[in-house]
Amino acid sequence: MQIMRWLTNLAYLMAIACILTILLSGPLYKMGWWSLGSIFQILRFTVPMGLAAIVLLLICRFTGAAGNRSVLMAVAVGLIAYMPLSSAMTARKLPYIHDISTDTVNPPEFSASMIEARAEASNPPEYAGQEVATQQADAYPDIQPITLAFPPAEVMSRINGIAADAGWEIVSSSELGMEATDTTFWFGFKDDVVIRLQPQGSGTRVDIRSKSRIGRSDIGKNAARIRAFTQALQG
Image (cartoon, rainbow, N blue to C red):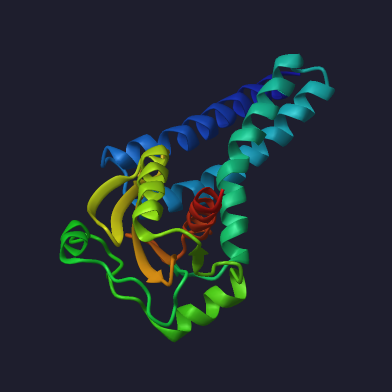
């Protein structure tokens, strides 16, 4: 019985450590206390530890060494640990790219203002070329140019509204385009967006490119951003 009490206490400590580490990883990264590499290394250990804590908590509960709170704790750990585990599983299914564009032949280019804003980014502002275009076509075939039956001025008005609703930070804007930065909530990752408008008769062709500042894989974030933008623009 003494061993089971010891295992119960150990399981609770492991569970609490797992929950706190995962929940604090984003804020600590944003404050500059943890590097991205350190977070990945820590989470590689933390997630298995959380899974082990779940097993121990359930064993302790069904042997009578712990009460129903152990089941609630196991559920909490499972829900929290699922977030980084799900991201890792998604990353393995997707190509390791971080630059998505509706036009991969002539992608919208970042201006000097955006290049300056990306000065400390590990990913260069230039488009990587055909290799990335091929991987994008395989993984995200739905990412295509947007054609609207409205003049550029009306389309640009819609784009301004979409950017405001999304909370993007506008870097530059003109009658035929916009550049903005979107900051993710939890880790504060910055992804840069460039939008290009081209008149086509009485309508407008819209191209959007979204690129992460850091990381080899964006875990589908840039494609998801372009899909949301497309849906909002066409809605």
